[in-house]
Structures are given as C-alpha cells and as structure tokens.
Length: 120
Length: 272
Image (cartoon, rainbow over all chains, first blue to last red; front, side, top):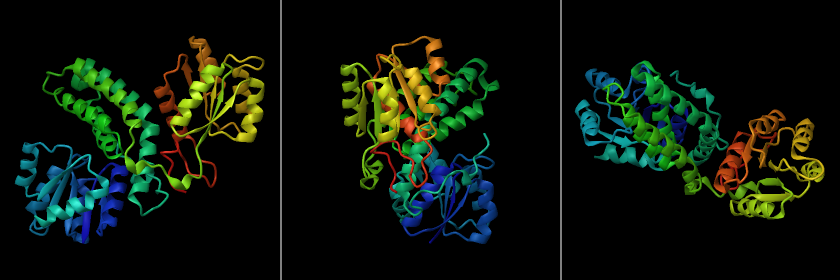
C-alpha cells in the first residue's frame, strides 16, 4: 500500500517514514501541502497522511483541494495534528478526512494506527 | 521560519530501524535544547512587549515544533508545557495575551526538560552494543566532593575516573582517554585553569569536553575558564541533576571520533 506523507519537520518525517515502512507501507514523503498536490497525480497513493501545520500550504487547505478534485477526492486523508479537540476532529472529518492521529504520535505504532483508521 | 532541508537530518546508524532514528533524533533534540530554549525565551520576551509586531509567527512555529518533537522523543512534560505555551500564544492576536502565564509556562517547560531527561522511555536503552560505560574524569582534590560526584556518575551509568591533583590530570587523561572531564579550578599544585589550558593544547585531548566545577563564581573567573577552552562552567555547590544534564548535553554535542558513534551516556548511546 502506497502512502504519501506530508510533514515539514525532518526528524518527524524520517521517523514516521521508517515506522510506516516497517509496517509494510511504501512511503513517499513531501514537506508541505503544495508538494502533495504536485506529487499526488504521479504517485497515486492509496492514503495520504497530512500534517495539519505546515509552511507554504497547511494540511487544512491541502485536504480541501484534494477533496475538491475529482481525480484525488477518493483518496483517504488522515491528519497528523496536535489539535485533537472535538471541534478540530469534526473540522477534519467535515473536510472529508477519515480521521486524525494526535501529535505527538507513537512512532512505533503509527502504521497500526493508520491501518485501524483505514479499516473503519 | 524557513523549513530545514530534510537532507539536514543525517541517516540513522541503522537506516531501516525507526528506533535507531528516534535515538539519533533524541540526541539532536537534547543537544539543541539549550539554544532552542534560549530562542523561545528571547522571542517570548519580545512578543510580550511588542505583541503581534514581535516575532510571533516564528515563536509559534518553534514552540509547535518543540511540542511535537519532544512528545515523540521521550520528553512528554516538555511537550505538554510547549503545547500550553502554544495555546497561550494564540491569544496574542486576540489582544488578551497573558504574558505572566506564558512566562510561567516557559519556566515549566525548561524545568520539565530535566525531569523528562531523568525518566527516559524504554526505547532509549540501555544499549547492549555499546561495550561499556562512558568515562568521566573527575579532577577534584576534596575527597568528599569527589566521592559524591563519582557516586552520582555511577548511579547514572557512567564510569568515573577520579583524580585528586591537577599535576596528575593530564597523564591520567592521556592513558584513560575520558569522554568528558569535570575539573575543579582550585587544585593544589597545578590549578584547574592550567590543567584546562594544557588539555586544550594537546592535539589528542583538545576535543574532550571540559566542565569546570568551582567555587570561583565571579564573571571574570567564568570568562577565564571559558576562554581557556572549557565547554561549560558550574559554580559550587553543584546541583547533581543539573550536572548530569549538562554532561549529557556536552556528550551529545561531541563530534564522534572516526569509527565511533556519538553518544550521550550509557542509556542514550546508539548502536554501533
């Protein structure tokens, strides 16, 4: 399963990538939302993991654009966010995301968390 | 804030092991924490005075990243207080920023660093592949003080190398090759400042971090110590938890010798 990971913090990106790879995902990494939009067409990921706060284009705006595009609207989006309050989760779901993984996340179980959300 | 180039992150020692990457990232976080904390404190004071006209965006970003990284790398209390500070900063734009609460949150964040450091997560170690403890040489003429430091070092998993006189320090350092040297300034015979100067002039020992522990508290004394090449300076009486933190930070900053991985202590040394 191919996963597109958008995360601007290099250490977090590296650890998440290794953790997801160990869980069996093929991982493509980018550093902001604009790169997600640039790469999503060619990479055709099965799921997108979006950091909420990123430079250039944040996760919120990125998800909105992905869902508005018929070519990418079907791809499941999961947010990585420190904002796991009910209102923020509701906001993410309203945008079309399938769920949120709270930050700081447990890097050693990240793959299982993604799989669990995909299974719901 | 300009995002760092992802290529800035060196490859972990085991390129496919997330735990190895986490240990490496933890060391970087640990080594960078003092400067990161200084930056937050400085920007916070400017934002408290200037409000939105201050470096608010940069401050929010560094606090946000600190919260995320700290939580993932085994500093849960740092993460919590950084998150608290981040939430308080959201009120700057609303015009009801409470600078006192923000300063308290920042103080708590700094204190939490020491607390978290003494309770590392399981994935940090111990690492059986290190082949032995890090050597810390303790040059101190007072037997009681020397023993107290050595006991604390042993309890933290280091291998102390006690030395009671300055004129022995150089020779012991050459034979024992310590990873770090704790040095009293007031020593009989050759004093600590002279020892430091000789250590830093020795091509083999010059890169070994030196931390002064001394009753000499004046600014001039501290400046002399630092100008002689010391890497840190603590005034006695030394708080042992603080000493252990400073040792870990100095060891984390140390550039590894060829063929030897960086390490910051027996519980925080990555696999070879």
